[in-house]
Length: 112
Length: 116
Image (cartoon, rainbow over the protein chains, first blue to last red):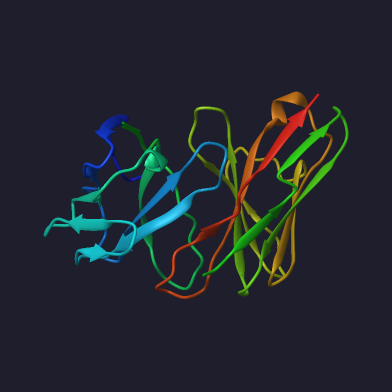
């Protein structure tokens, strides 16, 4: 079972920041938080991941609370092409080859 | 960056026939690959974990004799849907473990299977 809880859907205006929350209150100390998104009829696309520090890359920022029980994915300037289902996943990042277990995700709709 | 190629992207087959789907890691060696299935308006469901040179590990409820997985090399895993039925129609997606503890899993673009 997925260990995360996300809102079912969110709306965002084009050009504004999209803040997608995720709860992972049972996260273990060695589990990372991963974010992927899936545009219709495509494979999931990796966005970002982190352990406890905030992370930023060219796509997004990841803010993880100090207790690590929740996180927020921030798309700083959403575009229409960011409309997708966003998945927050916790996973042990080790050498054993652990699968990603997907929850229902958040459907983000960006409109002009 | 790491790329996973999946082929074919779409396939239509008749009921009772078998279909093979290939998953390749193009620029890295993947000791472990994962196969998922996704029905319309649902999330991805893990079907099996494929390890190079050994038998795949199937998730509960997934028939291993129906969904044959072969991982004969570090860059190729195949999923064969045997004796396909209309209820097997789905979106099948593979992913590969990059084997670097700081890198995420990478996904193929999926295969849309339609069984008529």
